Image (cartoon, helix red, strand yellow):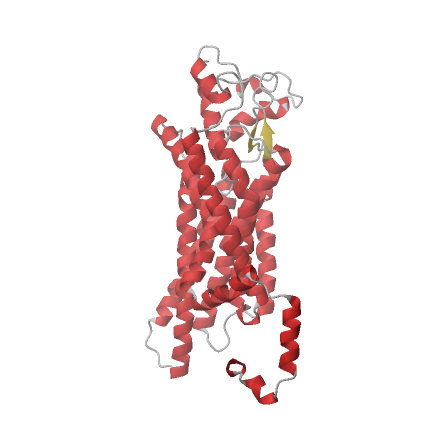
Length: 409
C-alpha cells in the first residue's frame, strides 16, 4: 500500500475519466488538500523511484482547518456534505435507481416477450436498456456512497469493477445508438434492400460489447486503492487512477474516452440523421404506399433523435469538466471551487440518462406505450395457472366459428 501511495500523486492529480462517476469529487478534494496543505512522505519504495519528488511533507503549510476537513475533527471518517445535502443526494439517486430498474426492465421484457417488438431497431434498444441496467444496478450505489463519504469504503475489487462496468456500459450505449442510426439511414436511403437483418444486428451487438470491453480495460487495470497515510489513518483510502510510468492517462482519456466514446460516435450519428433529413426533404417521386412507410419510419426517427440528443446533453457537462481538468492548464482557485460543486451535479445528470430512455419510449413511441400498458397488468395481477388451463380448455371446446371472433363471445 505504501508503494502505491508513493507513486500515485502525479498520476492522480488530474483525476479520472468522465465515464467513471464513483469517486471524482473525492479525488478532486483529496488532490487540492494534499497539494496545498498535507502531503504524505513515503520512503520505502521497492521500485527504486524517487518518491520525495512526488510525495513530501510540507511542514510550513499544514493547517488545522484542512486536516479537519479531510479527516474530521477527531480523525474519524466524515461525511462529505451536510445532512441536508446528503439527504438530497440520497433521494435523487434512489429516484434514478427505481425509475431506471423498473423502466429498463420493462423495455427488456417487452422486447423479449413480444415477437412483434423484436425488430432490428428494438434489438439495439434492448441492448441499450441492458447497458443502462448495468449502470443503474452496479454503478449508482457506489456513486451515491462516494458522494456521501469522503473515503472509498467498498474495497479493491469494487474499485476496479465499478469504473470498468461504467466505462463498458456507456460505450455500449453510445455505439448502440450508432448502430440504430446506421440501420435507419440505410433503410431509408435504400428502401428496397437497405437496413440490417436480425442476424447482422446480433453480430453487431456482439462487436459493440467487444469494443466496449476493450476500450474500458485500462480502468480495470489502473484503478487502485490509495492510502495517503496508512499508519495514522488506515481507513482513509481513495479509489484513484495509478498509471504506470511510460503510459499517459491523459492521452488515453483524449483518444479512448473523449474521441472514441463520445465525439466520434455522436458525429457519426449526426451524419446519419443529416443524410436522412436530406433524403426525406427531397422531392423525388414515390408511390403512395412508400410514402406511408416513410412517414412511419420518420416517426421512429424522431424518437431516436431525441434519445441521442438526451444522451449527448446528459454526458456533456461531465465530459467538459474532465476535459478541462485533464487537458487544460492548472486550475485557478475559482475553478477549483466551481468544480467541487459542479462535479456531483454532472455525475447525477450523466447517471440519470440510464433512466430517461424508457420514459422517452413510453411518451414518443405508440408501440412501446401499448406494450408497456399490456405488460404492467400482468406484472401486478398475474393470472393463476389453473385459470389459464381452464380458459384454454374452454376455448378448445367452443364452436369453431367463435375462434375467429374472440371479442364477441
